[in-house]
Image 1 (cartoon, rainbow, N blue to C red):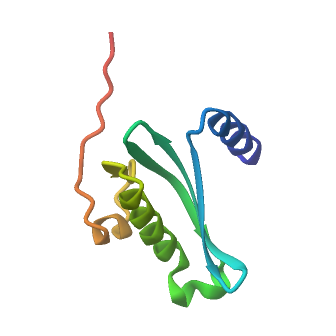
Image 2: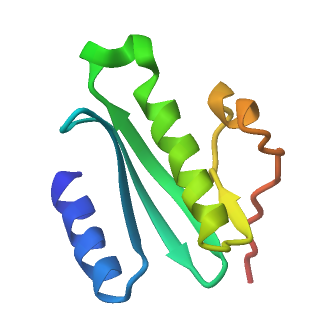
Length: 103
């Protein structure tokens, strides 16, 4: 999985699609995001945090900071992608259906 993500990051960075953001406490990154930007949208792919700081919800803070940055950068849409995680509803995400079109 690590090799896959490194490859995706390299290819997406070459096309200016990669978005990697972090929340810091002093100089220490405690929450990070791995997402993609394309045209007017941001797609949140994965997030992580330092468990020593879980009481500060650093992953949620990183997402909030990234949403604020997305607004400031004039993106029109922030997509949390698939999944029913509670934090998505806390940010006001609305449920959408994913469809597969087959020939």
